[in-house]
Amino acid sequence: MFCRRKVLLLLFSLIAATGATAQVGQSPYTVRGIGSINNLATARTAGMGGVGIGNTHPLFLSIQNPALLAYNAYYTTALAGLSVESRRLATTETQDRLSSGGFDYLSVSFPLLRNKIGFNIGLAPYSTVSYSLLATDPVQGLPNSMSTALYEGSGGITQAYAATGINLYKGISAGVRVSYLFGSISEQISTTFSSDSVSAPGYTTVFNERSNYSDILISGGLAYRKELNREKQTYIMAGFTYDLETDVNATLTFNRSRTQPLSSGGILVNDTLANNYKGSLILPAAIGVGASFGRLYHYTVGADVRMQDWSRYSNFESGAESGLGNSYRVSAGGEWTPNYVSRNYFNRVTYRTGVQVEKTPFLINGEEINEFGINFGFTFPVGASGVHTSFSLGQRGKTDNDLIRERYFRIGLGVTLNERWFERYKYD
Image (cartoon, one colour):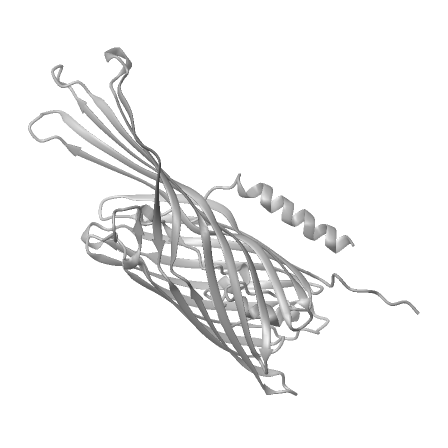
């Protein structure tokens, strides 16, 4: 009962904190499309570079592939995770540093039929938009005049999902996840003209755009697990995921205002150009494959590949957006527990490391934006439960061709709480 109360307290605390935390993953590259895409990695799998499509554990749930729920159909499991990061941005002329933090995932899984069918519900970001860009240039033909443009964006899409995985036959399992996508993205462009000339008074023009999204996304998964040596408890596992292409319902509100200093009359123009204009966006299909080899409660090594063709993305009636292209992510990593049943606590700690290489969907100035990261992490056991930490060092982009280089350090913290619920106790 005490553990159950801890689970519920954790869930309600994180739900309450979701609206209060800042967005993690601030990046000027999120000006494109719907921003950075979340891969549903937990703090445990993040320490392995995000390997989780063909990799699971009896005590620590993987939510990247719904078919893996069939292998976690014993405990009722609650997962929650947060992260914070520091990101350093650099061009050939200037540098800046940003810090952010926020909610990563919240999930509960329980068995419908023990060791046969597992069910999972959860909440996690699908995408994040967070940027602020400033550009200042002289106005040609007007001495002592400047034009300053500020581009800002925030928001993203959240997914609330339900998933199930079924063990079909001799290590083959299948699963499906149905997600309700919802959220909004707000973008603003403020252009300010300033001049010392009386004949050309300064003014500011502001364009505000807010897009709201809501619809259903369906994802499927397959997994295969084969025991190699029963005595040593070694095994191999493979996984496959597929997200269907989705036409997401959307509405757009767009307005414009132009102001002068209050001494010159204040607001001159305030027009609503579109109000709840209905449209849609196309989220392209995504495919993922993964494989792992391990010894139960001792070690695991694995790798994942995930691909998504964002050149098929379109928003409202604008057609395909030229600033997005085909993307892929390759992850590889492993974990090691010296002795899970040792009396020495640190022999029961799990140690992880991994790397990931990603070709992001962003195309800027005709250049592909690539990312590389090194990761490591730990799980500190608490009975059948655990506290997970992950640490990531990475770089996105470069300074050539007027681009921006991002170097980041991210810390993730996650909790897994396991308890045997829905059991009928027997008394002598």
